[in-house]
Image (cartoon, rainbow, N blue to C red; front, side):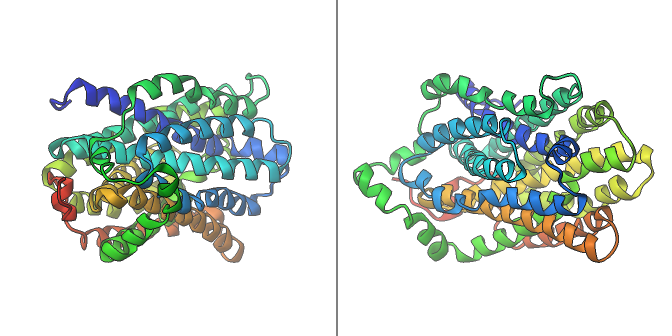
Amino acid sequence: MPPVEPRLVSLLGLVALALFFESYDISMLTAALPHIARDFGMSEADLGTWLGVIRLGALPVVLTIPLADRIGRRRIFLTTLAGASLGTLATAFTQTTMQFVAVQMLTRVFLVMGGAVAVVIVTEEYPATYRGWAIGMLGALTACGHGLGAILFSQIDRLPYGWRFLYVVGVAPILALPRMRRMVRETARFSRQLVGRQPLAAELRGWHQPLLHLARDSPRRAILLTLAAALFAIADSPVYQFTGYFTQTVHGWKPGHYSAMVLGAGAIGIIGNVVAGRLGDRIGRRVVGLAFLTTYPLSAILLYQGPGWVVPLGFGLFVFCSTASGVIIRAFSTELFPTSHRGTAAGWIAFVQALGWSVGLWLAGAIARIRGTLFDATTGLAFAALGAGVLLLLLPETRQRELEEISGESIA
């Protein structure tokens, strides 16, 4: 624990709630997938397509996230927290595949926006010396959402209404909204830019301006990070998304067995968040990102191609490399760009990752139809992470540098 003021520690815990339930929602779709597929009559060949469509629900984020740079991080954060909670609750009451997919797509908009803004808030408020640690700890705290999902999923056969009960639990964040409104303040960096701003209506009319600034002022950084984030997402989504389905259908695991793996190996794996953040602060984001991304394919091989006893080891290594790589990409998505379009940059990368996740799942299904099995395709796609690691080396190093120095932005 670095020597940071208590206010920042409290802020980190509060904004982690948004990402915590994003992880929880994703874990439900992974762990309970066999149960959901059975209830709605989804075939194995169509699973990748349906999951990819759900991931595409994040696409509208690219049009809505610029509002965080126009009307403030706090307003958008609180709005997305409420929207995601209600969307997760609504999922429990869907009756058809189309209803389930539609509600999950809408929920994904709020989840992705909330996660992007949470990272921006932490990035702008923490000192440069410990900024990587803070982003890593944010990832570690939120990854615990998978743990909550695993605990509840282990009792799915005893819970009332089965997998639907799991989505009812997702409404919990809305209960914390009053406390959030009191405790989460607007970031100091954004508040400095409020001087000379236009009325709210005018700011809303100019919602697209941050997108133009991102394309005009930081094209090279945006393009390199976009490609890296896309390749990592294509590699990451099938490996994670099919773990529950793979262990329960290929190895015959029961829900309790899968939950035990998530809680045991996954608990060790999420330390990758903090390790990547700390190492990124000490030796640099680029080399740390490269190290974890080049190790990533090994975890997929162990998980999907090894014997049954190796599966937990592969899963733990996968979670470690995946979370560590995600920390580095999230850090770059906020550190490389000025305050005027930092939220848009973070949202753009979240959008790119959502698109990459959909492409990865679609590719896994398409390759499985043409040649091999779904799990062979998943292993092969994991090697896309290597390209992401190489691209990170082409970005400026941001370790222990003030945001204004990195972006060339003047301090008002």
